[in-house]
Image 1 (tube, rainbow, N blue to C red):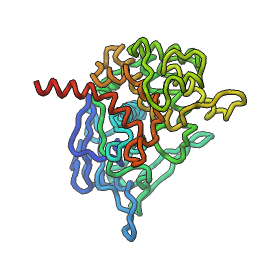
Image 2: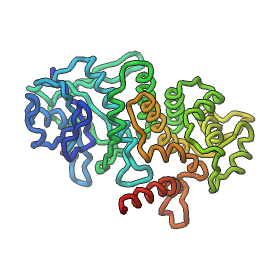
Image 3: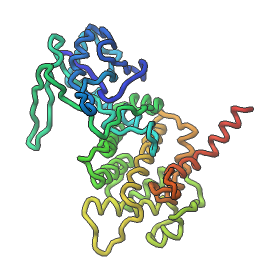
Image 4: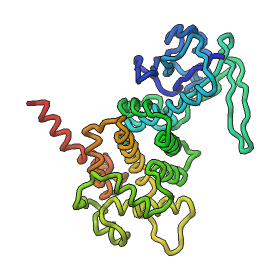
Length: 380
């Protein structure tokens, strides 16, 4: 039976090749046309189960655009074994991860979440493509749900999935991930990517407590450390060996005095203070407030945005150490200067006009010298 991989909530303006996979534009009734023996009508039947909400008196409509994924090894008929499907879904998780790395945080148009980048692998019969079978989990196993016929939409775009987001892939990162050989490093990265994606859905069904726990699990997995604060602090300091020494405590509402007064032991630099704070926030999320123990300075949302930005830098170094990735100039600046974020309440407004938050200010100041240098070289 044929199987098609597609992103129902993402459109592709043109074909894009990354390694041996291709993103193919889908447009209802027109694209991709016949592809590897599958007619346009079959694609319309499968993707016609997905739709956008109606507005006012307008009813919900099938999605008009999406993206289909094919591989160089695909043969006419688009058949794939269960093992191939699972392997390809892992590669699709890399695609989603690289898009989240490429997104712009605190932006209206260049932001996306993991649910926006959902990839569906759907088996279908070319003769009746609108008939679908969906496997869902149960606590005692799983079950299959038959969705038959063309009578209405089966899946509606969630409210938290924007229908106009611009998706930017970190192509070098994705290419490196796709080259990962089987082994212990790939297993760690795969597990961390799954946790990262689950922590970045923006879905109301996953609260911030769960997201924070997932992010700590993901970072622990990448650094290959047990759930121990001292081991975590040692490992992350060893990993980010580009940080300046002596350390720089940046000016802001949360300066050295503020952090060191709250966390007065084993704090030699801002990263150490963040480790204490992150662990306290995670422990409170997992176990509730602990009697007699200090709570975190940062609220959960600060830890979530910062760790979501920091974790890809860890992945990139692991790939670079394996000879699969080369740091960009932006990567180097980020890895050496990220402690600047720790001086601020990241999602608080910078002024009474409420036009910008401290995350945007800190990020722009971090990259400003590099942008100035690049501009100067371009003008020479």
